[in-house]
Every structure is written in C-alpha cells, then in structure tokens.
Length: 459
RNA sequence: GUCCCCAUCGUCUAGCCCGGUUAGGACACCACCCUUUCACGGUGAGAACCGGGGUUCGAAUCCCCGUGGGGACGCCA
Image (cartoon, rainbow, N blue to C red):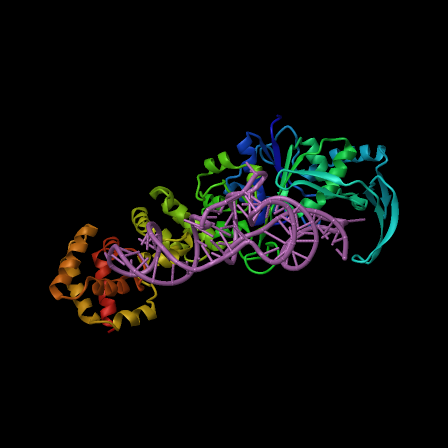
C-alpha cells in the first residue's frame, strides 16, 4: 500500500473555525497514525475574500494546536507551490487538457465543465429558472466512514469564472491529483459536492481518492451547524481565554470519534495510535463547552509546576488591561502564588479574579460574603483575637500557622471555621480560595495583619 | 422543491457489522462522604434505544416505510 497523503485545505478568510480545526486534526491524526504525509494547502482562489494577513490566522492556529504540516507553505515540499494563487500554470495546463477532450465550453464569459449524456431543458421551481439537466450515470463515492454513496451530478458547472479565476471544485481536484492525495478527509457538508469532484477525476483519467466525510459540529443551542458567529466557534477565542491546546485537541478528537472504549482523557500519542477512519461516527455532534471546560481543568491540574507557572504568566501577560499588576511581582513570589492556586482553578481565565488580592491592596470585598460572615457569631472578637495572634505566631510553614489557629480556637471555644471565615474575608475579600494557612504564609505577617485591622476598623 | 447523510440518557458516546446486556462510561444536574472556605476526589440517584410495520423463539442490533435532525443545490470554499 502506497504511503497515505492527506491534506488540509483552508481558505484564508480571517477566521479559523472549530470545525476546520477538527478537520485538520483528523487529517493530521490519520497521517500520523499511518506514517503518512500531512499537506497544508491554501485555497485562496477567491481574490475578493482572501487576504495576505489572514494566512497568519491559519498558521498560528495550526501551530498553537500542535498540528504541524509536512508539506505546505513555510516548509515547502516537492509538490509545491502550496498556495493556489501561485498555481495558475498548473490550472492552465489541466484546463487545456479538459478543453482538448471536448469537456469544456464557454458561457457568459465563464468556462463550464461539460457532463456526458442526453440533455433536456427543465424549469427548476426552487431556483426559479430554466436549467439544462444532463442524463448522467451516478458517481460512486467510496467513503471510509459512510460506505458506498451514490449521487448523480446532472448539471454542468462553472470551473473558471468570467474574471479568469478558477473555481474551488476544479482547483481542488487538480491539486489533489498533482499533489498525489490518497485520502480526502473533510466535513460532511462537502459530500454533495463530491459527485462533481468524482466527475472531474474521471474526466482527467485520474484515480479517485478514498473519501472520508466526517460529521459536522452543531451549535450547542438552536438549530444548524456551528457558524463563525456562534459562541465558542473560533480557535483564537480559546487561545485568548487561556485554554490548553492539548485539552482542546483531546476534546475535539472525541467529537465524532472514540477509541472504542471508555477512555476519554488520553495523551496525544495514544490518540494517534488508536485513531482510524472506521472509528469515526456518522452522526453530527453538538458542541458542549462544559465538557471542554472539564477537560481543560483536568489538563491544568496535571501540569508540572514549571509549566503551570509559565502558562499562567503567559495568560496574564496577554490580558488587555492591568498586566502591570502581575508583571511587577518578583518571580519567586509569583510562582508561589500560582502554585498555591493551581489545584483550585478550573481555568486560567479565573486567574485575575482568583489571585488579584495577592498583588494589590486594592481588592474588592464581596458584599454578600461580608454580610454572611459578619452576621454569624462574634466576628469582632474573632478579628481582635486574630490580630493579636498574628503578631507573634510562627508564619514559616502551613503546619505552624495551622497549629497556632487551632490552639486559638481551642482556647476561645469558637470553631476553627469561624476564624477561617473572618480571616479569609479580611485577607481576600471573598469566601473561596486556597487554604487559609497557605493564604497567611504566602501573604506574610505584615499584610495579613494590615488587612485584618482594616476589616476590624469598618465594624 | 430536488438530491445526499444521519437517528441510544439533556449533551458526547459504548453496544449495532457477527440479534439473547440489570443498555456501559463521561459531561451536566441532584444527594451524601471527605473537608478549615471553595474546588478536586469518592459514593450514590435520576436520566436513553424516534414511531410503525416486518424477519425471528428472541430486535437497540437485520429489512422497509414514516417522522425528525443535518447538509448540498453560487462565476463562495
């Protein structure tokens, strides 16, 4: 069996859709699984809609996801160039072949591909116009996911626009032929187009590749497939929100595919080992951001300290406002704060709100929490005792702080929880966060006492 | 309207090909446990074979018809 060659062929429209990401991923996985070649081809024949800078959106998104390409722009390859805008010579040659075989004709300045068979004029109710139907044999699509699919192409179609630019169907097929693509893995929305492509392959006398039409990703609420305007549809959004690419890739791999057992969270090497076309589902999948968030948390939790700190720093640095707040902190302290919070976070997005009070005295006091804590027991007395205790207590370790607090609770007869709640409110302004002992230790005696006193002063 | 694809818990899915399961897992939700908060984690609960016909001793599984969902029908890709 010859080496597998697959391709991902996006258009530089300025967006990198999550559905495109999954198509790219499945192609990449199949190439890696089979030891094949993953080709990146840029389909930029529509000069109206494409632009140079949009190319970077594609490169950046693929790179961020870790989907490296073996052939394509920036890395080259023996079947280049890999941008359709640079392949005019190839298309001219293939168009000439079609013309020589009598399979093209001009109409309204455009070039049409001519189907073989009897013709008849028919009025199309839906399109409200008369069209020429061709009595044609069905095209057979050998689909690795759906099985054998037949569809009859019964109308000639445009392959070169009147402005001289070739159309998708034509260049797509020509490139798949000239780039020796063996498997076309793409979204199901292309299944109906495939009969056009099969007709072209046949007209060129070229072997038809194996197809694999993968199910679509549906929007989480409401009807229809996910579009670029839907919440969570764009890869750059996940990048910006600090999602871990390995988590997103793992999640995406499970949208329409499964390893055949209960496993979900898997290292990419394992996904590559298990991935195969027959394991891909046939039905569309609804996108579920909650499950993605859970996957992201699981990956975040197991990040090594160094990696977590690096990710946290990266995330905070790209925030639009207030980046200076964290940047002014010294490395050791920053690291200590981040590692204290790592086991508690669901996502890097929580970082600003979750760690703000470590880096500034100006942090919000949650009014509801304050009301709740202050309305219970004798917070005034607890605060006074805490201020007294923290003046002399050993702050060197969590254990020492815990011991001191427990001793205080035992002396006074109030519960540990009462001290904990009041102290937490004073130092962090809320009722969620790391352990109170960790909070004390990392914040340090001086700031803890200052904040306790500040809260006491408001009573 | 025409053509194509699809159909298991709210969601992602295993099981289907090669009929016999208390129809399994995960996310979400709820309860309990753990616990110095909040999480994590643990235990448990509720929750599905779209409908109708066939074939068969027996159908989630095979066949047909409905219905529902999705896609395509551009000088977009």
